[in-house]
Image 1 (cartoon, rainbow, N blue to C red):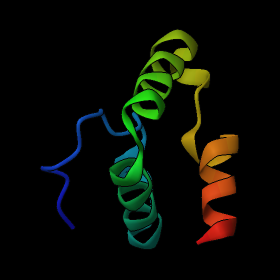
Image 2 (cartoon, rainbow, N blue to C red):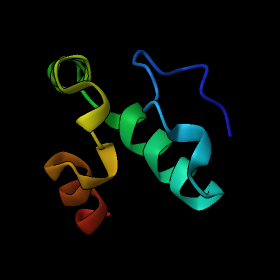
Image 3 (tube, rainbow, N blue to C red):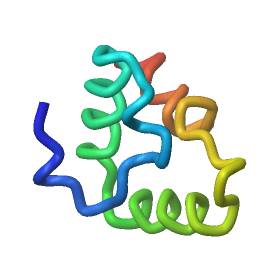
Length: 66
């Protein structure tokens, strides 16, 4: 599992996720376009600790389509 190609920060609680979830998060963040990356970064910074990628609409919609 490599995170070297990500242009965004991982969620703060990433290390607590099970390996399967970590892989999904990395796959999701890798496929984001520039606008989605910017929205993710803004959401993460503005919401702080209340931001949860696993509960976000974008992640859940992506997971359903996967």
